[in-house]
Image 1: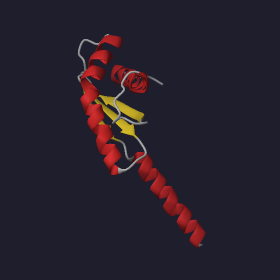
Image 2: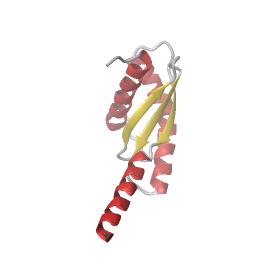
Image 3: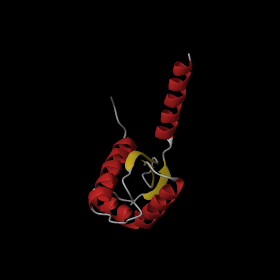
Image 4: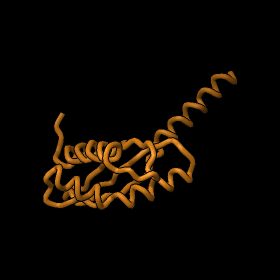
Length: 115
């Protein structure tokens, strides 16, 4: 299995952001979230950070606001910790794939129960 540099950097960014959110960022708007994936542009200047959480739409909105507020700190820390030439711009996106999978699983269960 060969990894190119953006994939390796993306995985390191994912680990660092998860660690910082759990231990260093104390924003009450950011509840218990999981960083599911990070995708980085080839030039390492943009990192899309996908997160997942359980909660209402209002909770998701507040979490997104908290992440937006913390992104300057996270960006600076990632640049220093990973010793990157450029500090990647962080773009946070809600990852609804877990909710989608859960809904599909529920539909399949309902179909089996109806049979």
